[in-house]
Length: 274
Image (cartoon, rainbow, N blue to C red; front, top):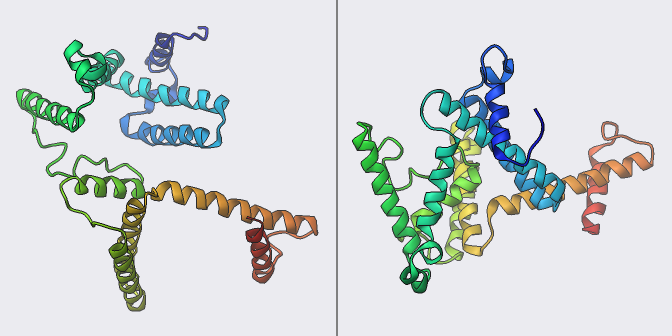
């Protein structure tokens, strides 16, 4: 089998990997749940390549992410649920339907992107999905029983907090400005102090989570996404710590041999440089 620019070659490769007896033993053992973490990881690696501006890596990571889609579609085909073609048809139908100002008739294109149109179309799709589940004898509320239940549980915590807040804000459940959220953060810090003093791990975890949620909310009102801000701080910490490591190496020392005071002095020096 040779490489190809045709996506169907990738589908053929996955079919071969999942073929009993002649396929790959590891691939044959996998299921949706075991592959899901790899799917999330590949999405992050795509984002990382974009952040680094590395187009060669981006090309490769997009391929790895596409492989995940093909993998899940193959497993679904094996159990008779759907196949890759169904995935493509579903997303193309969705994109065409959600952009009548681009793909619609002359009247729709002339009307442009009307306010609230995207939300109205998504509401129609949700109603149709509910009706389809009813027609198949399934619980129409299985995938969400409340307004916020559509936010995926598998999202990173900071991202999910932001999504929950954004959706609640659409129906008016929101702070009107940032300053009161600062007061809320101070309140949460006080409650965390009390939990730490009491020493209960469950209470500490709960109050710590409340504090993080409030900080995400503040960032939203300031136009700063917590995940992006934290990613930047992570990179800054890595760079400064690497500077400590390099400074110690230049004088013949190691991280393991250095004292905390020595590392702190080098940290401050690195901080002044950035």
